Length: 81
Image 1 (tube, rainbow, N blue to C red):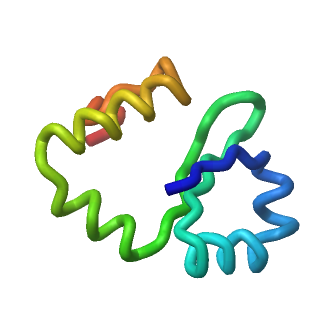
Image 2 (image 1 turned 180 degrees about the vertical axis):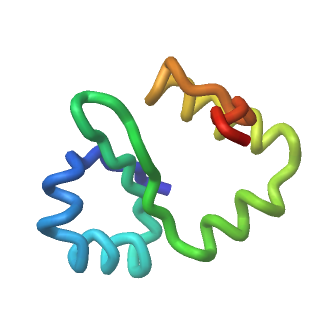
C-alpha cells in the first residue's frame, strides 16, 4: 500500500488521475490544506479492509493518522454532536 500527500488544489485539479491511481494501484492519498492533513482518499476495497481490521491493525492506522495530523485523535468528539 502506497500513500502519497497531495495539496487540496492539486487533488481538485487532478481528481480523475488520482481516482484512477487509487482504484488501479491501491494508492492512498492524504489531502492537505494549509499544511494540515484534512482527508484521505482510498479505494472501497481498502475501506472495507479497514472496517474489518483487527484492533492491532486499527492501532497502526491510528498511529499513521496521528503522525500526519498531530492535533487529531480517532474518536474525538465533534462540537455540536
